[in-house]
Length: 65
Image (cartoon, rainbow, N blue to C red; front, side):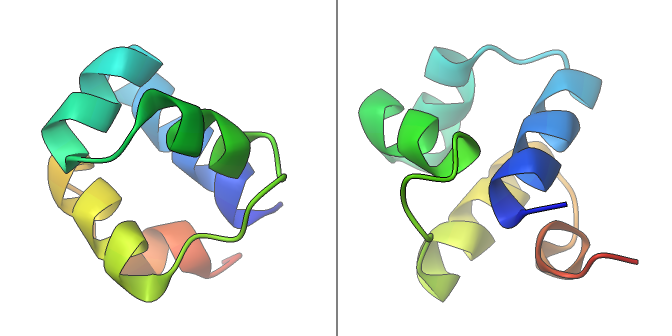
């Protein structure tokens, strides 16, 4: 799966909407949408912010294990 798909999965497990996660991670909703739909590759700093907002290790979002 892609980084975006793993972010979407983790967001759903956390029962957060895109707007809620974007706000918690201090990123735009449009940016999050693009990442989740594979239209944009998130920078490492963005992945760390999303992971922190979701309460998961960043490695969970980037590695396919």
